[in-house]
Image (tube, rainbow, N blue to C red; front, top):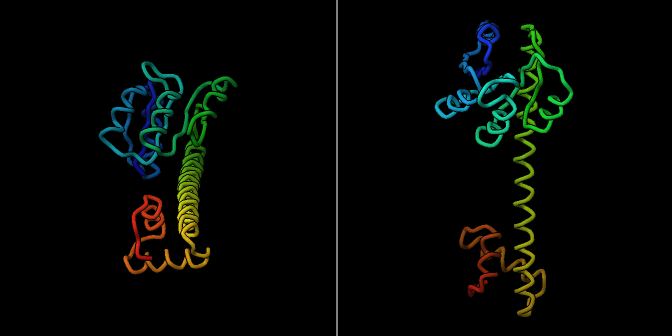
Amino acid sequence: MHILIADDESIIRMGLKSMLQHMGHEVLTAVNGREALRLLERHTPDLAILDIKMPFTDGLQAAKIIGQRHPMPVLILTAFSESELIDQATDLPIHGYLIKPIQEEALAAAIAVARKRFAETQALAARAGELADSLESRKLIDRAKGRLMAEGLSEEAAYQAMQKYARERQQSLRAVAEAILKNVKRDA
């Protein structure tokens, strides 16, 4: 994996980089959140590990921006286990919260969990989008059927006419429904 690390403490940053390289990952490093966001514009890492408290742009702000612009698994790294910081972090699109000092085994486990949770989240979002699109198509088709039924066709005949038209012109039922609803005269 290509992993981005942002930590203002050089010892921590270099230690993480060494651990990650030992695990076989390629690593980009940044000294703060602002630099991490700039690196994201030029590179496409697979995962980000962000220290929570950094100058300029902190890890929480960076995680929020990453979630909006460059969705990827994000781990928050901190020396602090304050409940307020944890509450703030749970409101963000992050996939793990690590407390320093980090052991290589814990880091490897956190990365594996973050990748899996991110993939699941992306799949759920895609499925939700598909379902919303399917529902919208169904509504359009039903409205178009209603328009044809108002012209004297039965529900079954209206649906069959739409299917026939779609097949003949190699269009989706949704496209046919949209055309009917735009009052385009059809030979159905």
